[in-house]
View 1 (cartoon, rainbow, N blue to C red):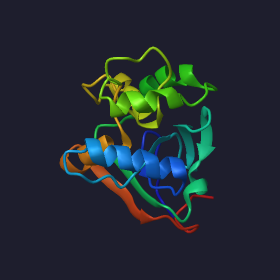
View 2 (cartoon, rainbow, N blue to C red):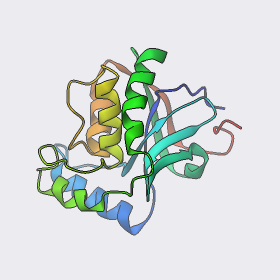
View 3 (cartoon, helix red, strand yellow):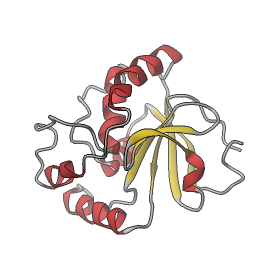
Length: 172
């Protein structure tokens, strides 16, 4: 079973038309021409409760990703107070609909400049990290692939889990 903590970050690869479309767009924009993960989410407690931008920005559970490739990381400087600062800030988006209209902005590379609405999943994580004092970027314009690339290159993140998630990994 995973030892999850509030403030852990996750990217996941799901299999749907939207997931494949997002990854195709990310591959075009990526520095390395690769994009494995199409969705990002924040883990808010040790039981696997998540906060993410799906159909609505809301609380869900990590268990919905059983059978999917996931990568969970922890920022080495994450503290309870940093988590609270970032989490309280992004809660203002709770209940908002997924801003599908932002996806073309990412492809046109203007999402970091035009952000008059709600964040997509990866921007939600970027905004969280910024308000937690762990990210110099505002968070706008980030994609799941950008986050995964950052985590792979940065000494500030440690891997909690990487692989296909099974029922045994998800806290009960």
